Length: 308
Length: 155
Image (cartoon, rainbow over all chains, first blue to last red):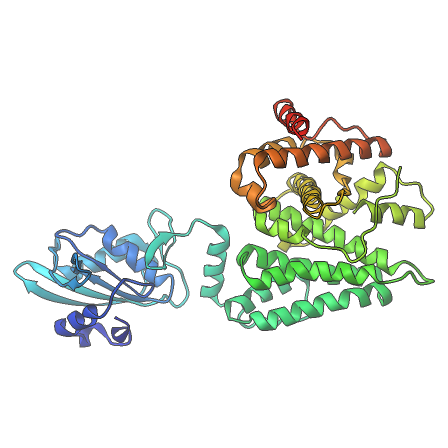
């Protein structure tokens, strides 16, 4: 079916569609098929929304899958003229309706096959009339039931973060947005390098900078870690960000007091404060494996609690 | 964690006390209030404080688990003791009943093993409470406390 993705539907013939289905195999994130004798509105607007809210794709109406796995263009009976009915279903059930193009083929008396090419809306997600945001994922169309996923999809649609640089002087929250943009645009390696830089600046800030600067550096690391934990909890870059806290603890453990103060304690205190704040977020989001990861660290020089 | 507060108090010539424990917890709450990325769920100050206290409990529990696996006696840093135990009982109960949660926090531990770790933590928290002059009424509700006690007796 991928071969049809770049063709206007009006250039696709029934034979061409049948040939594409012959080698199509299972439905995936870019195409879906619906068959049966009578299609309901939801058989149209759900897959159209799911495709539009990802990368766009093709919906074939009137295709049935046989027991041997092959697709058959048996057609279906539409309750009205197919093109009119499909257009109305999309317009009546999706806000805003995504751009679509359509080809209709009559395969038998009163039975039609329709090929709907669904474009990704240039600016907006398409929401169903009952308020659901559907997405096509792993061959299935499902509503988004996770706020973090919804944020990701919205940001990807609006382009937020794409142009935001990973500026080491940016504020923590601005930096969190930039980190999300980097993840969405495949910048994991750049992000790892940036996180390593943030972590490396902490001991220097503790030794040579005012407390406010150490706090700001610490907040940057926490904000980036929090953003990654929420958006991509299972990503290696999230584990790397959490482990950056451990590496900073290790650095603090080998620092020594100086005549002007205790930079080791300053750094440890800032780390503990922000680790707790980050851990509290992980608790509220119930990201238990990350709670374990955040705590799971062998300190290089364990120090016992003084008695009494 | 407590070590840092104690050492800091000594460095500044102050005797360690309950305030030594409270300050870092409050400081964590203030950080979450300051950095929006640390409260994307819109949590208010009470929800943040409760979550900090629960995280502290879990961090200490994980530390005891790590110590037990390494064959050493675990040292805990229960700064949460200075705030009482109101936030903890539902979570202690859930650690014992929610297999997925327990397996993520304490991989491979049965509910009984988790109960024994919680009982050990409760005992150490009680000692810390005496040392710092705070009041501690237990880590769990009455029913769960009985289960923790039973887990201790069988070990």
